[in-house]
Amino acid sequence: MSRHTTTITVHMALSEYGDAVIYGSTVMNGYVSGQYLKHRLFAWHEESFFGTELTVQTVSDMEVIILPAEQVLGFFAEGRLLEHIEWVWDADCLPFIQIAPSLAASIKDKQFMPSFSAFRAGKLQWEWDTQCFHSEEQVLLDALCSDEIWHEGLHATYSAAVHNSCYGSEEAAADLRREFPLLFSGNRTGVEGMDARSWLIAIGWRADTAPFRPLLQLLEPDDEAEDWRLRLVLQNKEDAADLAAVRLSADGEALGTWQEAWTPHILERSPGWLQSLRAILPDRYLYDTGEQVLNKPLSDEAAWQFLTMDSQRLLDSGWLVLLPAWWEAASRKKPKLRAKVHAGEGDNRERSSGGSLFGLDALINFDWRIASETRP
Image (tube, rainbow, N blue to C red; front, side, top):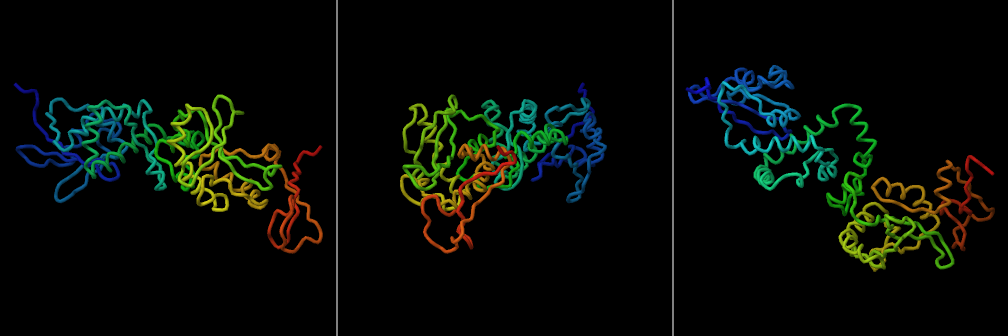
């Protein structure tokens, strides 16, 4: 004798926002009412107060239950149902029923990451790390995501579950902003040339396995060059003083001398470096062609713009910037910059070495002096 008093077939689909749209049917009576179904299907579901808080809507003369996106994974992963009813899942939603426990487990184990495509669209969404699934589980995910509707709904459901479980409180959300500020940056130009992996590294979500870190360095005029200039350097992670200068060509090829073990990492990353720099920096800093796009001479005014504005844009985009030591020291002291204006220098004329800084109404002879709040 069967222990089941009735059999209910459950049909389920995900909306584009990740909500589950659920309805039921029986062989004898056809579609069942939403009220009848929700008090039985969700009889053990505490998060919805045992179904009482769930909305029932009428669609084409059929009553459907709306399960909010943030509750979907948890409910189907737990799978706790009334035992005196035989529950039969519609074939279309069966792959989701099977993969739900694994998706929920990945959230519990923090095996998720922010979505790069969503970030580029100005949104914060979460997606699962495919590396945490077995081959059989990946087959189920691939089958679901091959359907455009399931793909969109599943990603929305997963993202809502991550937010609700991990960042739903004000404290957790504040921690996320403090630990990963670049995740909330309004600057999208800095991600040009990056793929999802390099972006996750840039924002600090994933560790960089390369033995070096790329930096953009501002070089001062010296005996070899009269002008300011930028150069790309690779800093050894084991020895910060070990810097390898790199020439970056117009096609993204890196040229120079470095440790042999660095080569595969450089070849993989250098095209992205160029695309990112072109997206962030104004044209005055880079050549359009040649084997060294960063060797462009910079005027005093361009150097000033880099020190005060464009270096910060690079930092906001995840780049590391190496500025002159005197500037770094002065910045820490909250400096006030002082310029000495020389009488009689008001006409447009070619500057001599150590000459004018600003090409405005008057040329200002700027000695690069810093007046800090603490004076000797």
